[in-house]
Length: 272
Image 1 (cartoon, one colour):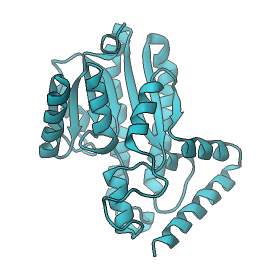
Image 2 (cartoon, one colour; image 1 turned 90 degrees about the horizontal axis):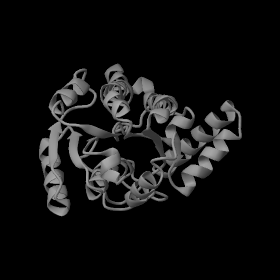
Image 3 (cartoon, helix red, strand yellow; image 1 turned 30 degrees about the horizontal axis):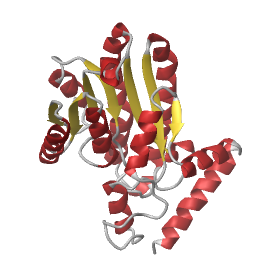
């Protein structure tokens, strides 16, 4: 069975406007899948879609949706009702603020929970039944090393990413016996526009074109994603992330929080 036969004919990629999401969408297209690209910015999505079509020859649809909105999953479901979707990627939910919980608005925290928890749950509940009925398919949910322990300045983000990791693991336990591959990809620092923007704003890099220190290249994430589709439920991407996961798993929860808090405080000190 080819990749397209196992996971096609269509994939939905949420968070596909740039960075890892756009690169993974291209990788899926290179393997013969048609792509529905979902993110907030219609113009950017259209450019990504045109590039993918031109380079690979697959069909695409671009759908501008704010994944934090209450009706996000319903809008995606409606826009794909005529398609057989065999692959779902949820690559969204970066934290654009990185500041103390009480210094931010409640709405910002609720938006993070909606984008990182409610919408992926709803999308999986919508698309997974068809995959199970066909006995094939794939779901990739992106997590973060921030979800391994709590730390300052990313309270809602870290909590939501912990949810994503456990959700992917539980989903794998239920769906893998039915032939559906589920993997939670846990990322550390990754060289994406969002990370470069954040580190530039914090004074850690000289421009948004610079590569943040220790950041894994997007191509590495994509390679490890495709290499590990059948190795769920959880895959830590990059040597640094695997080492961090091993460390966090070897200490108490109090120690894990202390380690992460110290690392964040040190990082913030370097930016001042």
